[in-house]
Length: 61
Image (cartoon, rainbow, N blue to C red; front, side, top):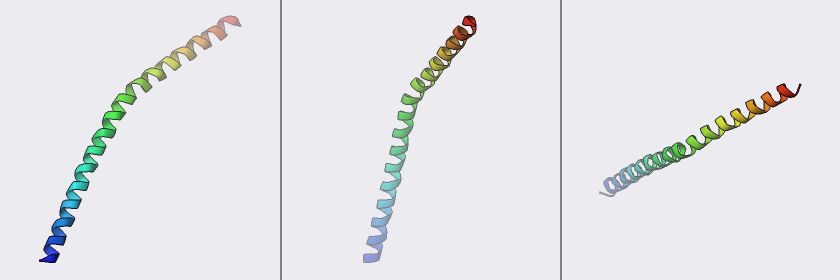
């Protein structure tokens, strides 16, 4: 009986671990979405500023 109880405990532990893992992945994905948009916007702004700076350098020559 002890082995059945032990295997059941391990099964419950594994299921809980999988569930927590899925929740953690969902949490990380939601953070990634929140962070991704500002990063993409800031990259676009940086590229725009670099282009403006390049244009200024070209006009001064």
